[in-house]
Length: 117
Image (cartoon, helix red, strand yellow):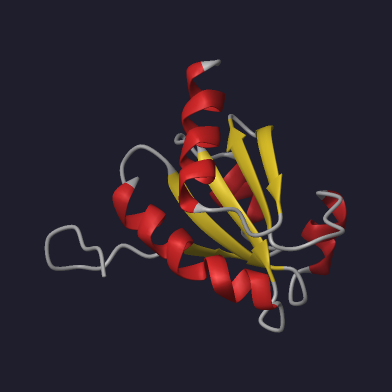
């Protein structure tokens, strides 16, 4: 379990109601994990997403969107397969990874996309 100080840093739960504020208006880049509780690959990468939330705290916000509970946002984002990781900066999608990717690939994609901006 990764911690910063004594408080565990966890991904932020995003809903249809909070998407614009938490993701589109975020001053930090955001890694958004679009997932569902019944999705095996989503559950498989969940510990990686949680670790990234702690490890990237202060430089990249990590958030999760349950696509079953928030169909409006999932539809607006064009989510058709999960897990689906989207990297946002200044309200725009910089990159996307569909499927259960290893941590090294996720980190490399974040680094590459943020470096290119």
